[in-house]
Picture 1 (cartoon, one colour):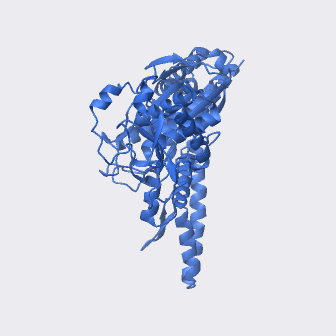
Picture 2 (cartoon, helix red, strand yellow):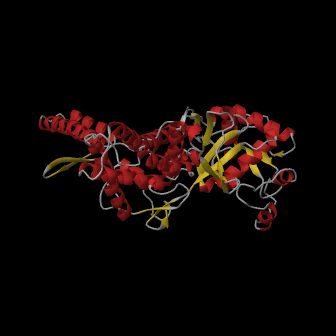
Length: 492
């Protein structure tokens, strides 16, 4: 019997605004789609929290024995600077500023995204489709929406007719907004506007002469709207209706609202059973934003090269810190919070090391089965990781009491205890052991020190080409050498 048959999982559904018992469309199988990054800059730490939250969801579903098809897209075209379909494409703008090809921008920041998520120990998705890889499918779904009368073409662009759609369906049901209120609170259209109404959104945009990324279509050369790609890729790989759609809270409106509208206009059915939204990450009590300087990139935390934190923190500590808050709550990052998380993480890892050497008695006086079920109850309650961690620290307390002879553990109980602790810490929460990290650090330090010696010899021999080659190769891997009076040091 699979674990999911023994456990009753409840998920907070943003669509109904209440917790619902999770019942997948196909028993034993789960289809899950999560909105991925727009790859025009280094991945934001707040975005990492969202991806980490859904990695935890993915891990728990796998732990319960479900077969999960997890789709997370890459937006590599069509995301304009303004949600009102104004401004430049974010990737085209970065390409223009850096004077490189748009796909160079995409490649650079897709690699960065994958590297950062790998450091945070996120599992890769089952499928990672791109917007540019599905242009044909996006054009085809636009044709369907046009044929059904919920879109209109104007000067080579195609717009979704929200007011016409709302006469049959309900635009705003996910975000709790009423179209009448939205109309009352928006500006009047000017003569230059192509849309019939301000609430309408682009399915296809005509490419202006200066626009770099463009594709042929029945309406002329252009590019797809941002909302459309997720409708196309989610339904292509998961079906017209699937189980879970996740993303950040900031995507609820308009992005996810528009996804629902596009699917209902195309297939006359709601696309998703359970909508899930992860909340934001703040820094020292304020919103993280590049424009204000109140911002931290993951690598700046790992290296310690920032103005906010007193020391570097490894990825596992950051992950543990994020798992200590429920995914739907706002989480504030600060030096004090990370120091506390580091202490908790170290205490947990030390206890897991001690478990291997716990004495075994002929009997056990601990209610391990009850404790184990409490761990499951926490995760079954909308993936309540902070409550789970509280139960795991109850286990930490027991480990020390068993070592002191104040509790006993038989052989079967020890196996159950170890399997439960390790299963939740490593498989579900996705933590990596501190011992493994320290061993990796020692190996890295030894390799870098060897290269520094080779570089110093090359410099002494006036072989500056080799010296520079070693320095540049290390730099490309994110290892910066610093030459000083005391010799050469390095930072990550």
